Length: 147
Image (tube, rainbow, N blue to C red; front, top):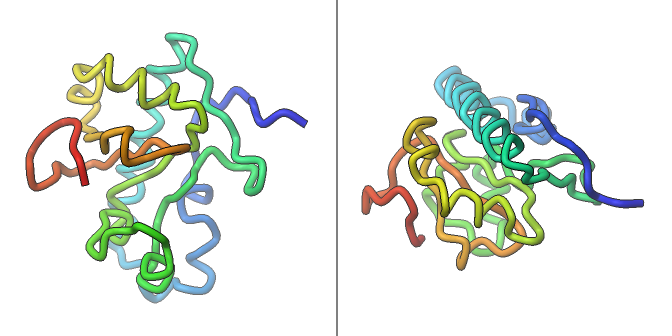
């Protein structure tokens, strides 16, 4: 079975990854609002790269295009390489499944689209098999940044 599928958008449910069931007390109203904005902007990104023929793949193990959405504290602490103050903790970041780097490559070629949408991209050298985007600028302020 192929993991290639046409994905037009992601949902809040995919973004939360069922983690609200066990960690719902950490999911504040502010985080829910952040998540809604993150999903809205990611969906604009998906529409933009899809219009150029880039296909969003589905992770075979989770059946979702989201590699990492919201991370409660315990999940973040157990995630290899996760920053202690990751924007995933506050629902301000989303990782899309990108096994071949097609999304990352497209985004690097289209910084004007990231600017228009209001997204910042972690440099692909740090995100093998996924593409990281966040709705707030990193400390450097660079549209494409290194962790």
